[in-house]
Amino acid sequence: MRVLVVEDNPDLGRSLEQGLREQGFAVDLVNDGVLGLEYAMTGVYDVVILDRMLPGRDGLDLLRKLRAGDVRTPAIFLTARGAVHDRVEGLDAGADDYLVKPFSFAELMARIRVVLRRGPEVQPAVLRVGDLVLDPAARSVERAGQRIELSAKQFMLLHYLMRQAGQVVSRTMIQEHVWNYDFDGLTNVVDVHINRLRNKVDRGFDRPLIHTLRGVGYVLREE
Image (cartoon, rainbow, N blue to C red; front, side, top):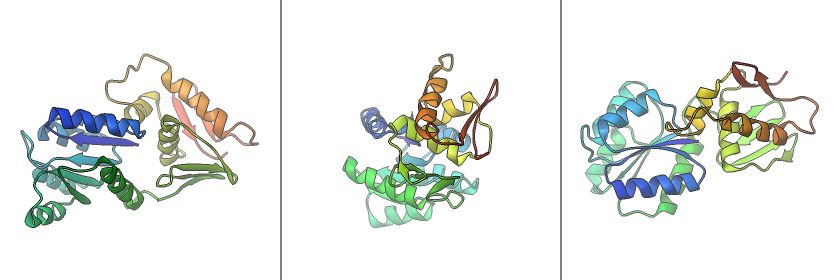
């Protein structure tokens, strides 16, 4: 899963980035509202975490622009402004949650899990393709009732493939969603991870679900 963090405090931004990556998220970190709006409008994210007081464009204006542009990505304000009217203003602007600094990282993770369980309207809580079932909230995967243990990166990769089930996704699309923008696209890391994932998801079953379209990309579908 992919998170956009918009935070102008460099120490806090790096701390959030490190903590979220340790929890298995791909993270893009930007430090001003103008760039934050650009990333949020053009990227594919599962959740946006943003401060209110940002250089270039404040967080409230950023979020209002997103909602006006029909970007429904769940958003959590992480800010020092904790008065009741500030919270109300943030939620009215379209935030899904509002957390006041100083904060507990464990609480932030709990709130992220809540908004991910809630999910955008078009995203089902549990993904199913054939006999393969992925539960984002529980971070569990089963096939034909058999639990499959995946690494954090493999889970993110499968989650993305299942959200795009039936559609061909290129290596570049996978890189942009599962890895960071500074990912070295010249390496074969995507192919390596796909092969490892295929060994866990398809090996031992009659029908493969992960298919390679040579020179194009990959597709997860039930034949």
